[in-house]
Length: 178
Image (cartoon, rainbow, N blue to C red; front, side, top):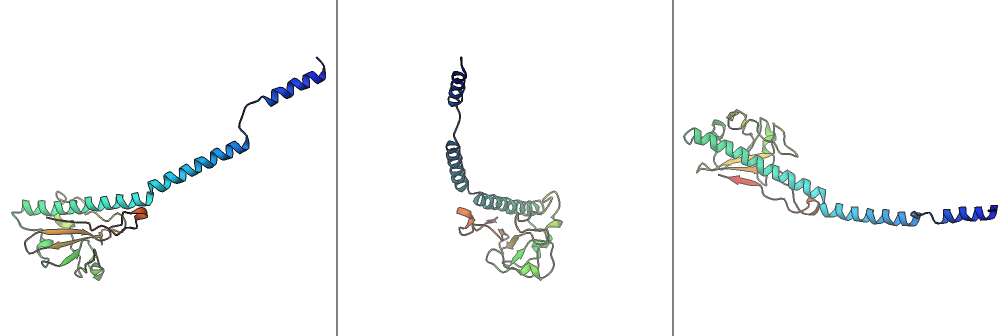
């Protein structure tokens, strides 16, 4: 075999190597990027966060109301002292705060200037007073209470979020009455 034949065999080997061209790789990456973007839009993580926080709010107000009603059942129909002393039909923010910050609007209502403190209800009823997952603190929980003359109690979430695309729909009214 001469040099020319060897060179030709070598070139044939190089030409028969299999692989992807740069154009093919770019096309595949572009398709993957388009599919990833479509899935991200379909999943809408912002909407899922709003839905998750609203589910937590439903759970929190149910927990608070369960504690209030269990206390009432265990005490022969008498409300917890801080609730019994409230004016029937008035709205009260739930929290430990004692200043005028308690009268900030909540769930479309203007609450009384004092908060109702549920921390003294007892750990066998409510170990920790739940707080709103986005804006709540122990001082101002993000929840509101209203006692009716019939003895029924309604707990409201102050800052519910819309659940539509991106969380932009009209916020739900999150409240439970017993």
